[in-house]
Image 1 (spheres, rainbow, N blue to C red):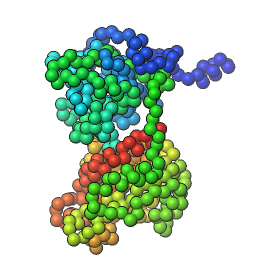
Image 2 (cartoon, rainbow, N blue to C red; image 1 turned 90 degrees about the vertical axis):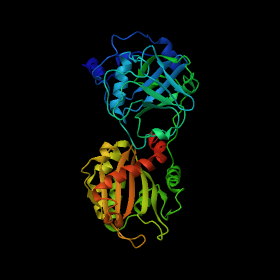
Image 3 (tube, rainbow, N blue to C red; image 1 turned 30 degrees about the horizontal axis):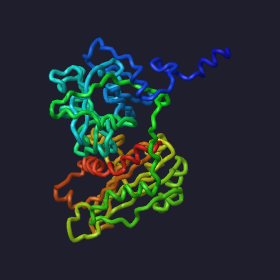
Image 4 (cartoon, rainbow, N blue to C red; image 1 turned 180 degrees about the vertical axis):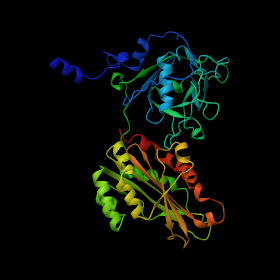
Length: 417
């Protein structure tokens, strides 16, 4: 009986990493057995990702190893395909066939003739996330020939490449070995491409020894500073209430009446950590008044689950209603199609800016340990004049969030460090 109980309580070890000792990426690559796969042609990838498992990859190149954290939580379809192909040896004995100075290194095509035109035999959809943007080097993303044409080819950036935002699915970031990518031989003038010997999939990061130290989570002041950079280049918008809150009492002070009572229960019961943000409004009513204000607020909770629980709670719905907001139906599901995790759009009438009748729109969505509130105040003359329809509001929201959220991308991504 005791033996059976011990067996039940013993941790699960995946066969591929059973009894492994911690090794450096160099040692992992040196010990790898690289063989040619039986096939590189598939009708579709098998489902190989397991729930609750954190996936990493080591790219064993002729220039050295590159250790990457895979974003299975943000791009599950993409990561599943990549892991499936890697585990089946698809990438073995291939090359980085396209390496461009001050841009990126592209690989993942061992079958194309000419190289760069091939794939695994199937294609799949894009997976865009508002806060996954090409704002730094070391991002792993899918190469494609247009929307929903992802296959096996990928690239790793050498520099920030913001012109690729929402055009290529980002599904990982380099933790160690960026210098390997940066010093690869460029292939623009016909040079021999760097080899990619194999891609190893790691499911226990404690088995990989590196010098990587994750960035510390942002402080409330750092979060507010990042938000303020969104608006610093637009002198037409100013804020009187941009601030941080680090206690429940400070956070609920912006509410009044019954809304404050509801907010106190919501914040107290869900592990509130801090809040940063504010509302930026038009300071000159003599010019274009179609956009009267934009707000952005990040609320940090004790966990990812807590953030989700907040948005899905009856208390949150009550809090929105108490502030006069009504739920806006997104009949086109444009937000979901744009890569957002929720379609919680609310609106209410508003008339406190430039004596104009306006529609105050609020979109809320979860991002790691944060709930994000985006506010847009639109002059009703825009709707009356036919420039915009009420049903276009979700599309406007999606466009604005994609413009704004990159400023706080690193804060969101490192919130669980």
